[in-house]
Image 1 (cartoon, rainbow, N blue to C red):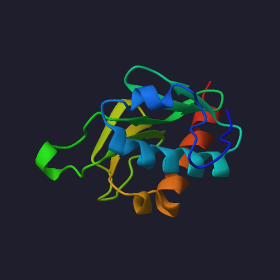
Image 2 (image 1 turned 90 degrees about the horizontal axis):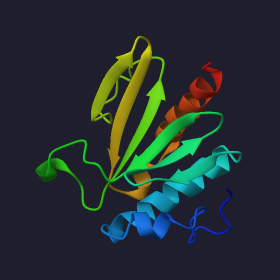
Image 3 (image 1 turned 120 degrees about the vertical axis):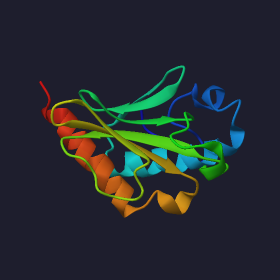
Image 4 (image 1 turned 45 degrees about the horizontal axis):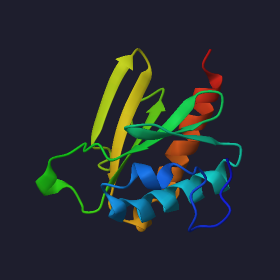
Length: 135
């Protein structure tokens, strides 16, 4: 799905997803806009606990699930989850898990639109490429 304007989400169920945390919606809209600008063929699916971004397979997720303790979490916040074939060595990564050999899941908490920067989008692009290569 493609976004028509920066104020309108690409998926009609997105506002419902953020009904309990409306202050996080602008963060999500910025993330969505930037992902669709970089990867225009991305499909978006709104689920109960996360919003997934996919090509052939899911490569990134946005959620309101906290990856860090409340005292250390920005308000508002959004957790971005990506999968890569290696562990990211960055202080921006709140948690990294290797559920399968050479498949790392990374959780990155963002609290401002400025954090949706070239570095984060580069990781998302790498996650998209990694996802597209999976069998």
